[in-house]
Image 1 (cartoon, rainbow, N blue to C red):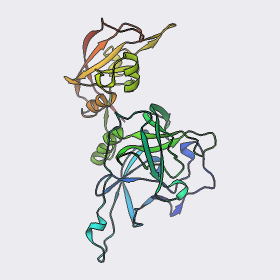
Image 2: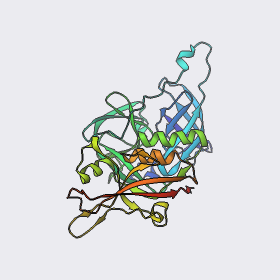
Image 3: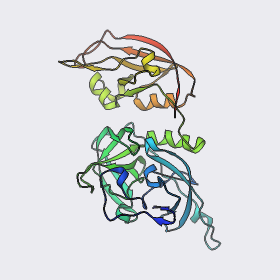
Image 4: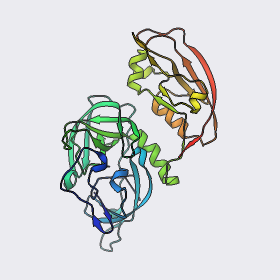
Length: 328
C-alpha cells in the first residue's frame, strides 16, 4: 500500500474517473522488487513531495524515489524498514515476488490482481488474460504498447499492484482501466513483466531510462504468428507495423506492412540484430536496450512481397547498418 503526500496533505477526492490523469492521488499499490526497492506506477507518485509504504504486516516505511519512466508509467522507490530490537531480523527481510515471463502468455490464461482498491488493503481479484498486445494512451499522452488486457477487477487504488499467474509469478503491473463510468467494467490493462524488467533495471542503475532506438512499431507475437501462419514455437522474426519518419530504421530503408484494397501486404521481418536471432518483439527490444546510444548495429531482415493470406516463398534476406541515437 503506497500513500503519497503533497505539502503534508493527502490528495484525495470524492469520485473516481476514467481518465488516468484524474485518478485521485493519495493511495496506490506496489510490490517488492528486491531487498530495498518497491515498484509501482509513475502516476501513483507523480507530483508527490513524500511517500510512505505500508507492508503486508502493517509496517510503515518512508520511501524515496530512485527513478521513474513516465512514458511507461513505472517508478521505483527505495524503502528502509525500521529496526526493532524486539523483532527478529528475519521478520524485516523483504521477500521479492517471483518474476515470470509475459512473452508466452495466452488468452484465457488464469491471472490474479492484488492491490488496494478504494483503500481496501490486500485485495485479491481473479480473472483471465482477455487480450494481448493492446495499446493505450498513458499519463504523458504517449501510447504504451504491448499491454496485457484482463477482466480481473482493477479499480482506483489497484494502480501499481502486481498481476500474477496461477503459480504466483509476476506477469504484469496493473496500470489502468477502460470504463464509461470510471468504475471497473471488465476491461483492465497491465504492463507486461518483460517490459517492466527492462525498464526497472535501467531505473535502478541510472535513475531514468536511457534508450537507444530504431524508430519501429513492431507487431505483437500473436499477430506475427497469425499473419505468417506459423506456430508460435516456429516464429523466425518480428514483423514491422510502422516506421517513424526520419528514424534510423527509416534512413536504412526498412519498410512496414501496408493495406491494399484487397489485403494486408507484408514487408520487412527482422530476424537478427548483430548476428543474434530475434524471434519475438521482446527479444528485439532487449537486443536494442542492451546497446548504447551511438552504437552501430547490423540488422538482418527478410523482405516479403506477398499478401498476408499467401505463403511467401520468395522473400529475400537483406542487411542494413544503423547507428542508434538516443531518446530524451
